[in-house]
Each structure stands twice: as C-alpha cells, then as structure tokens.
Image (tube, rainbow, N blue to C red):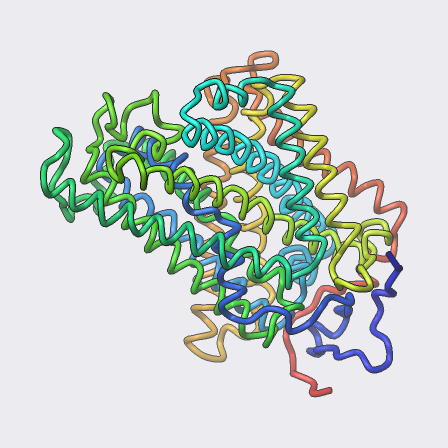
Amino acid sequence: MVQVDPRPQTGDTVTSVVGTGSDTRNKGLSGNSVGLLGSSVIGISTVAPVYCLTSTLGPTVGKVGLQMPAVFLAGFLPMLLVAFAYRELNKAVPDCGTSFTWSVKAFGPRIGWMCGWGLVIATIIVLSNLAGVATSFFYLLLGELTGNPAVAALDGNKVVHVLTCLAFIAVATAISYRGMTATKGVQYALVGLQLAVLAVFIVMAVIKARAGEFAGSLDFSWTWFDPFAVESFSAFTAGLSLSIFMFWGWDTCLTVNEETEGSKQTPGRAALLAMVVLIGSYLLTAVAAQMFSGVGDKGPGLGNPDTADNVFATLANPVMGTVLGVLLFIAVLASAAASLQTTFIPVARTVLAMSAYEALPPSFARIHPRFRSPGKATVAAGVATGVFYAVMTFLSENVLVDTIYALGLMICFYYAITAFACAWFFRRELRNSTRDLLFKGVFPALGGVVLTAVFLKTLIDMWNPAYGSGSSVFGIGSVFIIGVGLLLVGFLIMLVMQRRSPGFFRGEVLTRSTPAMVVEE
C-alpha cells in the first residue's frame, strides 16, 4: 500500500467546471476500466434482483394482494426520478463521492457529511444481510444437492453460520480489493446466470398457469396494475416501502464514474438501463408468479406467511421441476454473492471521497499502487461488515432483524437529500429550457418529496414495537431506536471530525456552488 496524494498532480486529467467541479480531486482510481455494459451489470448486480424477488414477493402480496405489480411500478417511479437527479449531477460533477460530494456542493459540508454517512451505514447493513443470505442459501443448496437435510441444517448452527458468513465477506472483499477489472469479470457471469434462470422461471410459470396445473392459478388481468385498487393507504405505503427497497443499489453505476469510459455520460445512461432491466424483470416475475400460485395464504400461494421470506424455495420444484429447480437455488445464491461483492463498491468509494476531501481521516484515501482501487477503504468496509454481523448475531437475533428493518430509513434519507440537492444545485438553470426545468428541477424534487414522505411514514411506524421483531425499549420500537440511533452516531462522528478537519467544515476544501460555465483543459 502507498499513500497517494489526493490533490491533482501535474499531468493529471481533471474535469473542471467553474462554480461546480473545479475543486474536485483526482483520487488515483483506474480510469476507463468500465464501459456502458459493465457499469449497467454492476448496478443490476448490486440490487440483487433474484434475492430481492424471493424475499419480497410474499410480504408484498401480504400487504397489497393482487396489486403487487402496481406497487412495484409505484416504487419504481421515485427511483426513476432520483435516477434523473443522479444523471444530471454526474454530468456536472463526475465524482465517486456521488451523494456526499453533490450534497456538499448544494447544501454545505454538514448536510453533505450526513448524506455520506447515510449511504455508508446503509451499505454496511446491506452487506451484512447479504452475507447472511448467501450463507443460508449455500447450505440450503448443499442440502438439495446431497439430499441430506443434516447438511442444510448446518445453517442453524450459529458458529458454523457466522464462520461461513465471514468467509463469504473475506472473498468478496478480496475481489473488490483487486479493482474494477476483477469485479467486472465476476459480475458478467453471475448476473447473466441470474437473468437467464429468471427468464426460464417466468416462461415455465406462465405455461403451467395457463395449463391449470395448480388449483390456485389465476388468469392474467390488467387490473393488477391499478394502484387505486389497494384496499387502504396504509397497505399501499407498506407495499411501497418494500418496493423501494427492491430497487436500492442501482446508484453503484455512478460511484464508479471516475473509473468509467465517458465519466460524464456513461454512468447516468448505465443507471437508467439498469433500472429498465430491473423493473422489467420484476414485473414479469410478479405476474408469472401470481398467475401460477395465486395470492392464497395456504400451500404455494404467495400470501402464505410461512413461505413469505423465501418464495422461490417453495416454487422451485412445482414450477421448474426437480432438476431445473436446483438452478433457482443457485440463482438466489449467485444473486446474494454477486451483490455482496459489488456492494463494496459504493461504500469504499464514498469513504475514499470523504477522506480525499478531508471529511474522514486521510489514511482512507490510500489507493493500491497495482490495482488502483481504494484498498484501505475496501478492507475497512469488509472488517466493519464482519464485526457488525458477528456481534449482532451472537448478541441478539432480534437486534439483527430490526437493524435490517431500519435499512429503509437510511435509503430514503440519503436518496431524498441527493434528489433535493439536484434541484437546488441547478436552480439557476431551471429557466434555460423545458428539459432543464423537468430533469434538473421538477422530477428530482418530486422524487425527493415522495421519498421524504416514505421516510416520515416509516419513522412513525417504527415507533410501534410491532414494527420489526416486536422488541421495544421503554415502549418504543427497537427499529426506531436503531434507525434514529445510527443517524445520531453519524452526527456524533461528524462533530469529532469537525474538530479534526475544520477546513472541510468551513467549506474551504469542497465548496458550495452552482453551475456556471465549462472550462476546457
């Protein structure tokens, strides 16, 4: 490891925009390592579509019934609006700090720091969850392949589970440590496998549903796409929260912008392409599964609470048969493992940017001399994930579950800030054209409003101990305490860093600004 001076050196290529990105820094990452396809694949992989589907189809049906496709579309809308914000901000300031950097330039260092913290802590929680899911499906798959229930039961051994989980984290950290070239190669295979198996599942489910092989099968209906048919607003918002979670992670396309060919244009296009692939696969799978299983609460019905946390484990054999059904288990494992590996990208690069701009200790700005990756930040993320998961697992299963439930709060927090940052950052350009008004102002602001509403509604719901595991402290739901507590921890760390790095918090390193004119260098 060597320390790379984050300040631009003679000969560095620096994109400068007067009043916007002129103070951004070259961080030493490997440029032109990823193209449009590779960036899109990384975004899709981080979302983990197959894992999201198997864990979310059941709970969503439990909230909104047959309107599941409508709710998926409703969750896609704010994510699409925020994606427009990311695209426009990236064109002006293509920086791997993304939400952190952009919110600093729009609202100043303190709001920017908290926005960066929201992204980092959300990613650590997701990483720990993905590692646990990958471990569980690993033993479930081994049990299917060997036909030995005792092998599958190994996942229930807490020591074995945690050690295996730590091994998955170590492997994912090592691949991410080796830089974008290694990451991209692994992801092509894993994402390709996921989408191929998902396509087979969709086709076979529709064919068998139309043949009437299952008593609960339903005929397709366009009324499934009507959001106004949901029985109550509270049920709709609960389903919407689940839907928004299913799209989290697409912004990884933007965090590799400094390593992407055409850093101003390609990441935004990749994010939109990834979003289209995700919503297409989600809607097709939702319709196919609903046609085959129906929404009943018995047997393979999607409304069965006993199978809600892993729908594909129930549907694999009935839909795809014994042999092909194993592929669905493999796809879920591949989905969790692939996302575990790519999810290191946003947290490592956000920490790198925060360090490069003196918002975190300077040691995290170290770049590996060979792989040109944020080595120390990646290792730190891996260690934090492993420690967090191990401690939470041995401390209390309820605390671990409630921490995952608190994830939605973090996601809405930093996405909403980024969306509002776009509208404010470009406020002087909104009268230039109708396009600027819509894509730089109206759409991002609308996305921010929706996510803020979900944030506040979730905050209120979290106060009730029934939200999550049912645990409480002095009558207050533990999910609320964990969610708000994690944000407060970030605020306290920010106060410490304010004493250690006064220059950043005085706005001397990364300045608040608005677009002016492009400077050719």
